[in-house]
Image 1 (cartoon, one colour):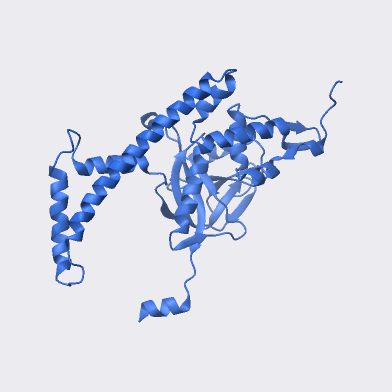
Image 2 (tube, rainbow, N blue to C red; image 1 turned 120 degrees about the horizontal axis):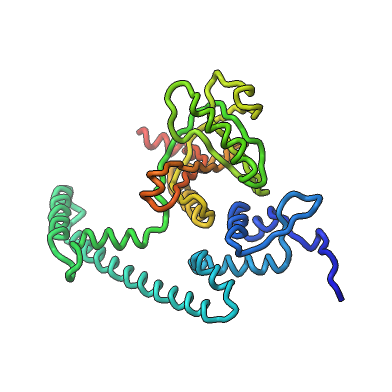
Length: 334
């Protein structure tokens, strides 16, 4: 029996899939661009919809990503009709895990050796504080001078190990000033506005009065997948100067910022998660007031891209100072 056209109740909206699997709409679009999942569009509904087979494929992708399998290897697995590729990829993953375990053991050994040095100091005596400092400098010098089984000096070895094991992005705090921004309006696909809004602000920036610096433009995405592109404009600019694009008042504020890779939404998701984890351990918290959104800025520069081998992407997460209890504040002032 021939199967009829699938009805809307059989399909899940992109917002529903995003919520159910805790994955951003932008990451879902990225997986689709990479050929890992497929979506459908209805004549009377502009957004992506996913059927049962696409959901099952997404679940497979998410499991493989949890195992830290690369997008490239997932593509190879899905393109293959045999189990050879998946066995090869998983075998390589086991080898990588063994290497990481070995690195952790090396790191533990180096740290324990340092702890043994520190334990020789009597922390109960105030006079030992200076001695502790001098001993630390002595140990530092010993670490620098002593080779490590034919490898670089221990301090370099330690840095090498910790760099390989480092998971969280390096975060800095930036303050974006209150300003006027030209808005592209909401779009469903970035290609819709690159040739229009992107072309407009490239031409406008050439006519800018005064100093021009980066970043001046930002992009954000709503949970349903719609995006908006903003570009900072000067006070003299009217909508006549923006070719009719709406000018909005951007409130600005504090943002936690880290660098990711443009075009790789999977890595972007990890960096965003890393920023939020950093915020949880800091004196800040997420600023969830209306109009305060996580944004990104594409860093454009031919020399930078050529030197790095990839395009950078700045991710900005809105933050505010974490409230301090009055009793804690008073205690700190006493």
